[in-house]
Amino acid sequence: MNDWINIALPKGRLGEKVYEVFEAVGYGCPAIWDNNRKLIFENEETGVRYFWVKPSDVAIYVERGAADLGIAGKDILLEYEPDIYELLDLHVGKCRLCVAAKKDFRDDLDRTLRVATKFSNVAKTFYAGLGREIDIIKLNGSIELAPILGLSDVIVDIVETGTTLRENDLGVIETIVPVSARLVANKASYRFKHEKLRTLCDRVSDMIKEG
Image (cartoon, rainbow, N blue to C red; front, side, top):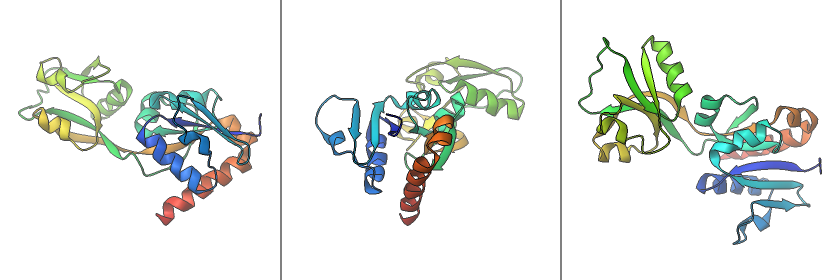
């Protein structure tokens, strides 16, 4: 069992896209395309075992050793700071973590800034760097509603195309950090399965460089 390379893939289009890269560099598992509701797929020939998990849970599976490798967004890594290795920028799933607000927003430095977000640690770190006092309002969805309804002054959220912001009369006022998918590894796995994991990582890296 320990000879397997266990890989946590994020459910959805991003996970499928990254799996196609693994398949192209020799780590395929054809059963993964079967039309069923299985979550675990194995290929004895290539020695890989894939899991489908919620994108925000990938880093947990890797950190706790249930997976040797995983694909996690840089936003998740910044927010939760899991104790894992970040091996490679896969250059897919590109977006930005941004501060956005209503288009007529003007910051009043005399009062605490109300920030709605599900990335509370990222927001705290960002505004601490600016020396700006803030009040975090933790939300888990429809963050754009917060400034529209007066719940917050600004939001800190992922922006991909900006369409949702524009359609709700909001706009980006600052980019905190660019985001993309990263190949991550469990620290113990990287030590004890180093050759296998490094070989896979190098093959993926070479394919990305080749475009």
